[in-house]
Length: 406
Image 1 (cartoon, helix red, strand yellow):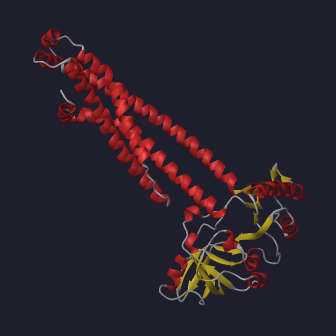
Image 2 (cartoon, helix red, strand yellow):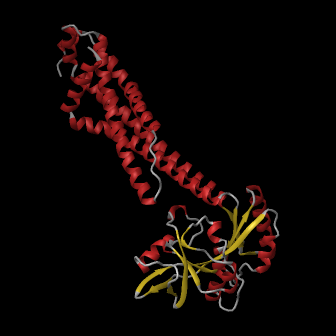
Image 3 (cartoon, one colour):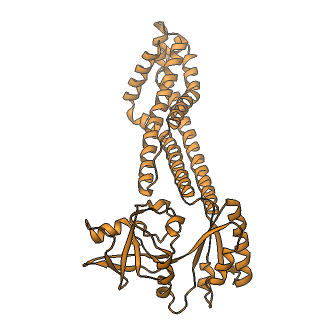
């Protein structure tokens, strides 16, 4: 018997036992699908994280109000100009800016209305966060210093308010006040935005000095968050420790919580990567157990098949089939079952990963290595768990097999 004939016979057997074959392959389907999905999603997630790091770098540090202390406390503290002066004196300091996220406000133009978040920023914000300007410009130093009523808006908001009209130069109402649009940002992927207001392409940016008077009337120079950019990652790491020490000494603790937190982008990346690694490990273990169960299921069903087809084996041996022919026949059946289970599992895993990546706006990436490993893994699984039943079938004595009654 050659391989082609063995494959044809395996196909016939599977067709004759569709239901049994389906449930035999089910555990392998689930295991392979889980492994494929977690591999692709993990790769897409790390690519997304790499995009964030590439966009903002590892030199960004930010100090912000500790919300847990803020909510629990009776007295509210904010960063002030004295803190900013200290930040700017740190070695390697390149630039910095406050980030003020106001409450959501209504934005209107000629009867068209949208509700979105308004963000107070400095003239450095668009460079600091690598936000391109598609039309117009960002803010000037003078506009920020004097708190002029100008704004930069996201492309989606520009489309909703102005449709086909040019946005730059138009006057819109933001929270009841008139602002002149001086720029429109490029379209941004919300999954790679960091420390944003959350409204993405619907954002409205205004000078932070203007928004301070709206958020905290009568107390200018108070900040929830202050962003710092340094020359090198080493300088940023050193500065993060110094800023944290400065804020703890100056403002102290409230109910065992520091009033301010100091964070770095790399810290978040490492934390999220660790979480993903743990989740991946758990899913991999579950998938491995599922594959083991599937392999044992195939071994069990092949042992049943050997018992059911004992007389057939005897007839084939009686008409000239050799032991290696019987071995090949049953081994190929087990391998085909595993390959079918692995193939459908691969397809299912790819579809799951596609749905997840589409929902999260991540880049879908399927490497040829994953496909090859899936096929090779299914092949090895089929051979490993099909070898013993195939060996038993090949060792049957023809005379005894012919006398066997099911």
